Image (cartoon, rainbow, N blue to C red):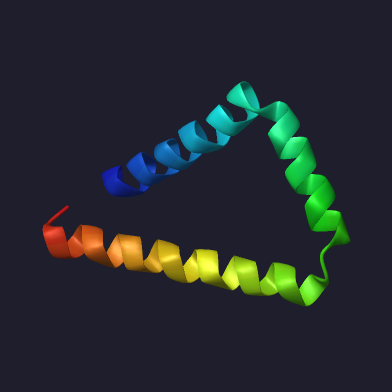
Length: 64
C-alpha cells in the first residue's frame, strides 16, 4: 500500500509541475491532440503504458 501511495504521489507531483511551470505548453499540446487522428492518440497512449510497465518492471528488478 505504501508503494502505491508513493507512486500516486509521484504522478501527482509530475502532473502538477506541468500545470505550474508550463501551462501554455500544456494548452498547445491539447490543441495538437485535437487535430490528431484518434488512432494515433491510442497508439501514443499504448506506448506510454508499455513504457510505464517497463519502468515498473525495472524498479522491481532493482529492488524497490
